[in-house]
Length: 396
Ligand SMILES: Nc1ncnc2c1ncn2[C@@H]1O[C@H](COP(=O)(O)OP(=O)(O)OP(=O)(O)O)[C@@H](O)[C@H]1O
Ligand SMILES: [Mg+2]
Image (cartoon, rainbow, N blue to C red; front, top):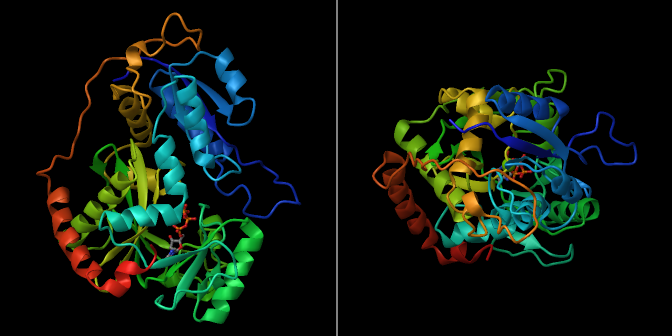
């Protein structure tokens, strides 16, 4: 149990009435007041003092004026190629310990193309892809249709609609132009994987029960995947956006273990810390294709996937939030390699902060654990797949 701390809960709030001039998905990644309050209340129930604060341009001054022991970071950020990494970068500058992944991981995970290159290097299956820096870039003829077209650096399924899945080069060009125009960034086209939608939660070194999202009752909506509409209006019967959730997923145990192992490897390949949610499409041939790693997964107690998976593992919502605090305070060395307990040189004026507790790190997965053993099996299969030179070259 961590001793009582003063914690800054750093977030970007979804406004109750977003401006009419903004696209409808503009604030989709931000957190609702309800989510922020749920985290704050879970932290308070563990005896901590919580100071919620918006991650905007006033944050540096605010942090200078409010000495805290820890930052609980859920800020998604706005603008820029590494927006999710901005708050962690500031916290490192001010030598304030924080929950979750560091600067490099958050920047890499936001960039789907870069993440996929790293997955490829690590032998982790990921759909073949091409990154378009300009709408007029020629299409790699080795890509197999159907493809799905998405912005390279967005989350919450922004830019993913029913017509994002394209069947031919003409549709592809239309879709690429549309995404360019709307999001002003590179566009990722990747092979569409028919199969089962899975997401895997990771807490510290513990892989949580897999969540399966079943879209078979959403046929009339025209969408069979986790589109923006599916996420935004989830549960809406008139719109037929009624996915079903299975946790644990309906998979044979060996398949489930190999999916979990691939997810853990994907998250580790980006250097995640404390938590992550890895999105996977399991193909009909049984290959777990990693779509992306989310190092800042949603933490709404009722609506987000990670708390749902934690619950299936017997971890209550307050316990999940407290676990994130203890994982971050148990880190012996800050990302900047400054020991947390004496991070501030007394000769340097910086934010005042109390020494952190000196507890031991607990790793629940060791090299001998089944998840890791299954991982070696999946690596063999992946290598076999990558022996095809045509597939090997795609997306590099
Ligand atoms: N290659 C693919 N094959 C099949 N479905 C895909 C593929 N890529 C994306 N999808 C569908 O689109 C959804 C959103 O894609 P992705 O996870 O890449 O976007 P995101 O905006 O980062 O999502 P998140 O809301 O998890 O942040 C996936 O969960 C899946 O349903
Ligand atoms: Mg996703």
